[in-house]
Length: 499
Image (cartoon, rainbow, N blue to C red; front, side, top):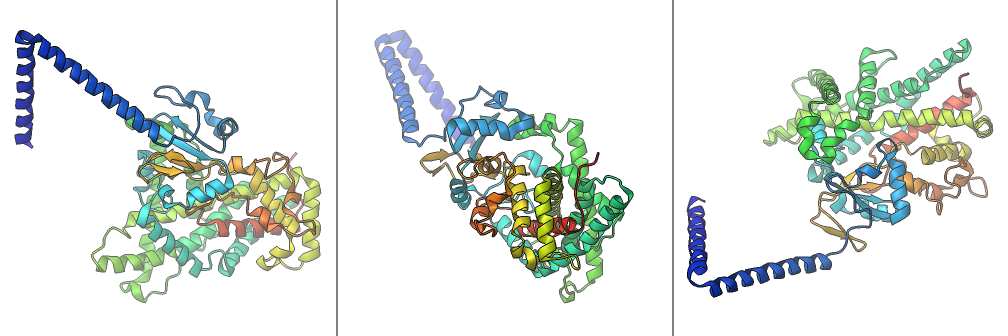
């Protein structure tokens, strides 16, 4: 307040007058005062050092450079390999700084599972780049009670619509018809096919039906927009990481053309979904409660109506619905399509294993019908090949980052600072030679028991969809789609690389 500020100034003036008087009239008293002050400062510094010594240490890691931290020793194009080298040097739990941001890397399955089951480590990065994309809404970048509530509602609703059950299998089966038709046309003409585009279109169509209630046909311009938007959002933009590591430079990052392109892409995607929500509202009519919901968007519109009747205009605002739908597209489409692309690549590179999958499908399923979910337990070789590709490829090598929300929590004797970003190092865990002998080799037999059955216990140590409280919400659907499409394609085709 103004009064306390005036009082402080008066005290400083009096102290100055006293010191001046000491200097002029009482030099011995002045010397005593200076010595006492120096002693007090020394004691304070000693207390601070003692307190630091009594605090648990940070996890081991490189000291880093002033301002830059460990940036000079990192290869931004092969970050997972740079981190693997640090883990080899410092152990399974390491810490380092990049710019102003502290990172903690967990490279041990049991340790990562223990840590990520703790709510102290379930936060999300609050960097401006992520807030501009989501506004703190949705499933990927929200945290706390809001995240819990929306994750629970989204998963419960999607399960009601057959998420990762028979309802989803029927959707996937319908899209698989289009995939097989594309591949058959290419096969008959002898033309190579870019399988990623084919798989991506099908994956986006499944999510669009579950979230927006749209039954997309192949070639629909809206489906093409969704696919290109999801691919664009996934594109790597290293310059935007500057605002992530150096928040003070965010103003500069926003001037970079690449950032403007990204911002426009996010805005266009949000506007598209906003238009879809508007169409669903019009379809539901004035009495939204009387409408039988057909998709996630319908349920959110009903929940919004109930919340606003209670005076709550925030929990289910448009931005929240838009972000939830965007997150499901972002997290559930590109990775599924790329997993299938890698499976085709390994089938071509490993013809002996491709032949084993063909033989198994012919024996168990035959050619008269499509492979079904109920066949999965009787197709151990097919499942082993899929699991080994998940392990080797590590499409998300660092998992999804978590933020420490506790105030200086302690984990296994190490201090985890508040706001540190924690990564479960999926790439490193999938290359642990103690768990996976000859980790860089393609060996699907590692997922088969001596009796030839699929080894579920071993597969549980493979975590392509991360782990803990914030593991990928759509992993069951992703696994279902990858299995059904891969099995259907290999039932009918031999895969080889284009000449």
